[in-house]
Length: 301
Image (cartoon, rainbow, N blue to C red; front, side, top):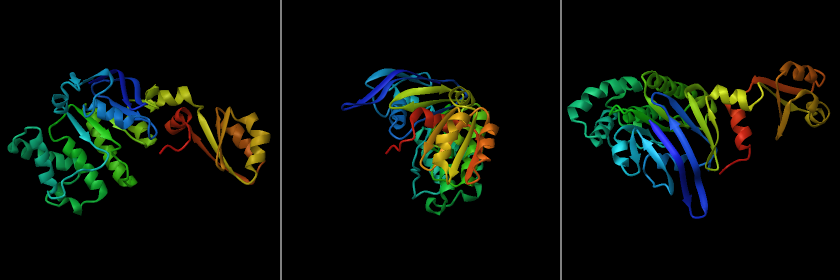
């Protein structure tokens, strides 16, 4: 569904996307992760044919982009980072108006609207005005709107940013339904648990390059130790200096917390029993640990 080879984009002296290669198979959910400034937004704009690359090739749904970008966009649905629903239209009218952009007849759209409202959990809000909806309702409507023309592929740009946990889980349920129905999804997100739950494969970008690619569990197993013990409290500095190296495979101090990466958490916990002033959290390693190891912990603005 998507093939990208040698993609490059430069703004002035800054190379934002640097020789990017991506392949997304039909029916899979592909995650695109990276810190701010990694090149995710520019990559999406290139894939959608909104800007032209300086080098490289893109084939989207079997169509060359940007040469035939308009034709390609007729086959995909896009959920932008910020909701752009029309506030002057009702929920139903937003779906109808959007369907007309894709050349659908009013009868065809009207027949599809009940299914989309049910998918979004908005059947009771069909005639509500957009300002009356909660943030979660607006996000679900934006997702339903992207499906109005039954696209082969969806691009989701941070679909759950700003939502509470209940709304996030509702969005996830809808996305799983789409994945199970065979839709192809490209997902960008800053929520590592979201990527770990939804993505079949993912690529981590940094400074315009792919620094790791694969299934979430495979990346965790290949890039990070199996367990993490987060240690904090009074006396941490001396414990770190005197004990950490002997019980941690890798230790990293961030602020007031020591992250002890290990394949034997009980050994670390046993050593901590001798330091009663210290507190700890023991957990399995996850995709966020991989992300931070590969892209660093420095704040990106």
